[in-house]
Length: 370
Image (cartoon, rainbow, N blue to C red; front, side, top):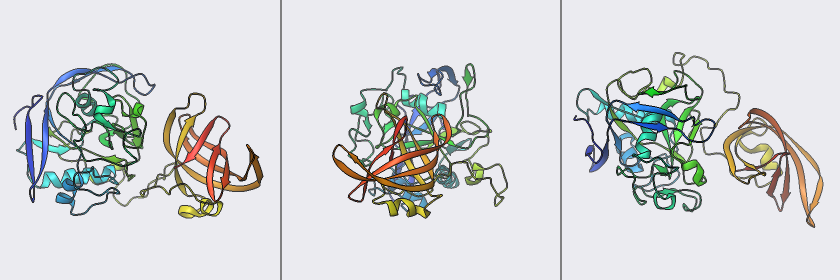
């Protein structure tokens, strides 16, 4: 398999008339990172070319290999989602088993550095083009995924690098190390895996090439998918091992060994929607101790700060409250959440009208259950 140049194209036959198109990504040096505290700018050199999926893996691709369709949004050309990091690496493993690549090459998730380098495609700005032309995000998506390749590609021909679905990367998530790096593969161990690119349900700032997010490797959500890379053996995989990362690589312990639960557990199913009543709030997904997805919004600047998960600890009903002439049923929920300030135990007030949670109040932020 020849070294790749920008503009080169290859196709892998997955069977049944389904092709997975790969585009060449040349070696090079670029400035990785951005302006946020976890995006420290540093020089990265990638010494080997690689091939990257022109699009994220679609439902058609997934069905051809895995023989099922886990996605919330159905449609052959829509991104596959509701797949965990371990699911994505299992897909890579099955591709490797099919012998679609020549000796010395293997399928894997791209590293975080490979992903950002390919997303930027030689650009240095906040985005690799005009956002509305290249991305499906909260202002344009209509709260759903869209067929791949329906927005403008970047300068190297790669589609949907901004928005549509978050994309799993091979790396564990942690702060960048100091100084320049050559062919980085991330830390040896952490609790979460990196996702990049933003999705259909986040604001544009989350779709920047430099923006970093992370999830537990077992989480499955309708906003997370992935794209595959074909890389030289020993490249692009933490630890330098050839082949796809095994599905049990999420843990250093032997398969079946007990694992200490995360301080804030993360669900493996789509989070429950906004509760319709106090009763549903206190009983959904198991009641006290259940996990719900939250979106934190700073009142100070009105911008979304973080999607995270909260574990419900307690619900306490309170007297009705009148706000702007309207009477609301009130209550206080105590929960534990992974915030931008670390894991915190928080009390928030809920105001309920006509069986619907209308508002959440926290002393310094508004919390909306999504």
